[in-house]
View 1 (cartoon, rainbow, N blue to C red):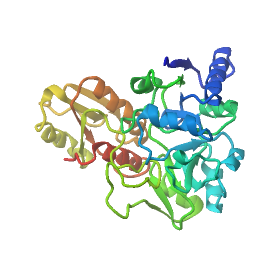
View 2 (view 1 turned 30 degrees about the vertical axis):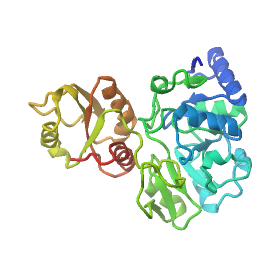
View 3 (view 1 turned 90 degrees about the horizontal axis):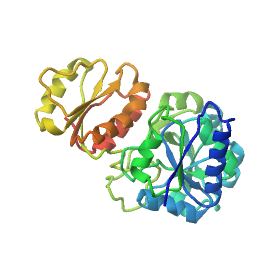
View 4 (view 1 turned 180 degrees about the horizontal axis):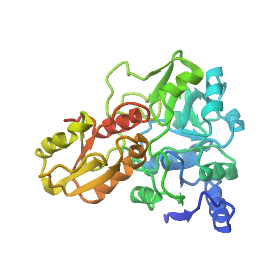
Length: 353
């Protein structure tokens, strides 16, 4: 299969080039094909969410296990009618506050939703992305779009079309290239049907924001041990034990910002310098004496939105440099920092210093 790379400037959807690219991509989706599309979080691998055969192709292309459910993207609340049985009052409040945007709501699925989308669970994750290209593509296709991240399963999520092609070139029909993602980490996933509500995956919409709009909310804590290969379907997208991982071994370094220089120096002693990569915040000078294969200028520690936006790009860049070990500071949990910590911990699994 040859993967088409269709370029769209999100600021100029009226151009003939953009119109043609969107029409081509929408036609592929309607015909049961796979299109990687930009969202404000990461690039997603889209298929017609109501076409069981098309959804199955997502799992094949990504090498994704059937126990991991996927999120459905819509362009208007009218599309909910064919996907869910009911919308709780709390969910309606959150839609009005955060849609379009990086918030996924787990809602009672209708019979029209293929079993594979929810991994057999009774709730389907739905969100309305705010990216203009994603919204226009879904509108033109006229169908809800199931779209997990457009990468091979477990690998670092893609924030550019180039990242998509690194993993999926030749496996999917097309990618819509609209430049880098804005947020850089996946959406918040929330179950508003429970009381208190439950966040299964933190993202750009924080627990404080959710609480202010719709009331009490807590973080998901598994009742038993999480396994890399679960014995049953996961309750939500984004809660797998090991996920978002670079090919290199990821080692997390935690401590106060003022001590990161010495902490990185100490951690670097454990690994051969020839394969060492470092995710380095702007406020932390590279410690004297550290010889690394590559250093990625991550962003400002004081601006966690920058760290989130560049997180996956940095991990992929260090992979591309041939690093075998990546040292990465672990940001505080405030705001979107909670989402960064979640992704890094799942990417590293047990590698911390």
